[in-house]
Amino acid sequence: MPRSMTGFGAAEGAVSGGRLRLEVRTVNHRHLNVQLRVPSELADLEAEMRERLRAHVVRGHVAVSGRWLEEPPQAAGVVVDKARAAAVVAALRDAARELGLSGDVDIALLARIPDVLRVTRAETTPDRDAVLDVLDGAAAACAAAREREGAALAAELRARADALDVLRSRVAERAPERVVAERDRLQTAVQELAGGVAVDPGRLAQEIAFLADRLDVTEELVRFGTHLDGLRAALDGGGSVGRELGFVLQELLREANTMGSKANDAGMTQAVIAMKSELDKLREQVENLE
Image (cartoon, rainbow, N blue to C red; front, side):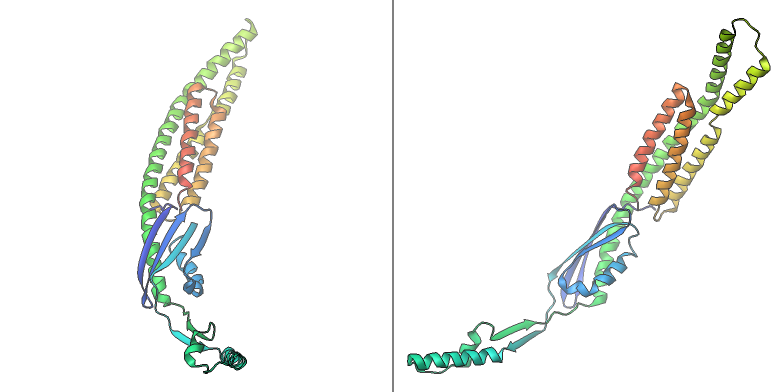
């Protein structure tokens, strides 16, 4: 089943004693473009996360955002700046002597001095497998949403392909009538121009044959039908078909333009215009497929 390039999915799970939530959003893009906005603790895993996403998304802009619902516990450490502590003790003792104050500096006082005693939290990389499991869950949920929308798009594309088949049949029905009308018009015009002078019937038949050949759209109709079959086959095959369908639509438009240039008939021209309108709507939908 074809997949839409637009989707959203989220997942959360236990990671290194905390709880992580990841969200994956995808929108249209010609190539695969991944953007990560995750907690700093996951920075060392970003390359693996990008590579993991390639298993879920072939084409499109992928935005991954994450946050801790519960931060994982981190190892705490205590750092005493002994040089700063010594400088503080010396300065306070000098001040006490100069001011004639009693008492001495104790550890409780030093602990309250900024930057003498610092508590640090060691930042470690969370469990790799747990993070990637959460990412897989979010990407899978996004893929499911893209597949649901892709199914709806495929149904729309098939309906428009059926409409194009109807228009193709209309052109095919009108084409012989149009050639007969052009033959009669040419005969009448030649007789009027000849003004009663005898006209070589062989030469006239030759000109009519040339005219019929120039107006013939049989090849275009056959190729148009073949391309429609290719469009349906691609939709039935599923997978990443957006680029393939884009090429098929270009070929369909090429054949429609050629038929329009050969039309020389109001009925055929109207059918070709309707074809182009359907193809334009198809193109808009195909741009949403991966």
